[in-house]
Figure 1 (cartoon, rainbow, N blue to C red):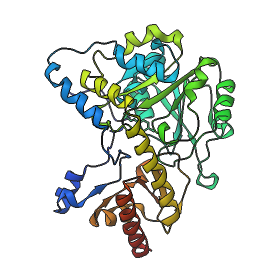
Figure 2 (cartoon, helix red, strand yellow):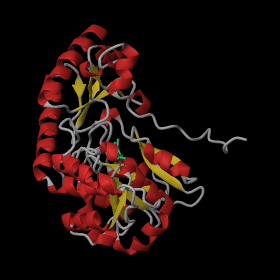
Figure 3 (cartoon, rainbow, N blue to C red):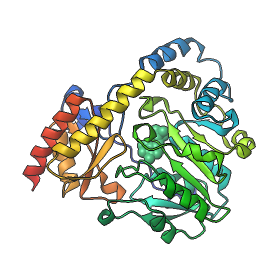
Length: 359
Ligand code: PMP
């Protein structure tokens, strides 16, 4: 017996961990700095660690499916009602909840190319078809309404990412508004703000007052440092409240994750430190790397290096793991995450040496 035909489904390829790379290279994991998955170099918020420890003795009891404490805190943070916050297992879980709530078999979605692979994966799991709009290097990967509307053909969901992974480009609020107003009535616009904390632009969550064809995705994986716990959310119009309970996998967001997220939300110092380091590092990369780079609103920078696979391989051997963006359709670029000041300076030294060698 075999599963159904899954040949159209691509498997998700995560960035490899330091242990795995160390094993392959016969190195000590301590000698490696992982700057390939846009994680928080300052680690988790200390309050979140305390909350995890405190929750440990209760993990034999199911969590509440309402996640009320976290939902209420997020509603307050964004001036929403609690019904407008759909807590999930990471931003990925939020994307799945929206796919389940909106897609019927053979519905089409429109995704950015290059872009985050999970939009297409989630749509396909839910029997959707995938179309793409192209962001071009010649245009500095600008996400303009014209670019997106040129490719738009009445899809059921259009995905926008701002700041955009892997290029770092951002979408202006008025351009998001233009899109919300230009698409057909049945089209949902998903604005993915996984890297929103690092941006200086206002969140699209503020547009939920006026638009009912919008969902905004946020995550605790980046600025809050909780990637390993899998916790995120979608901010949505109030009118969809009933759908959440119908599509959300029971208990998908764990009790430990919800408690940690709530604690992390309250630790502004850690968030500010994380954001400040990333904003410093992304400018440092842009100033100091001997290569073409693009402005980034996120905690990473896209770097044009020629042969990305060769460069990523060589930096790894010198202790720095970066992301080869060939899998995003950018074979001449790598994406390097913002590290601590020390890590970022070391990454620049190594990348500059390797770029000079490879040329
Ligand atoms: N959106 C984008 C653009 C991302 O880069 C990521 C993570 N790499 C996510 C969503 C989902 O992150 P998570 O599931 O960890 O919240």
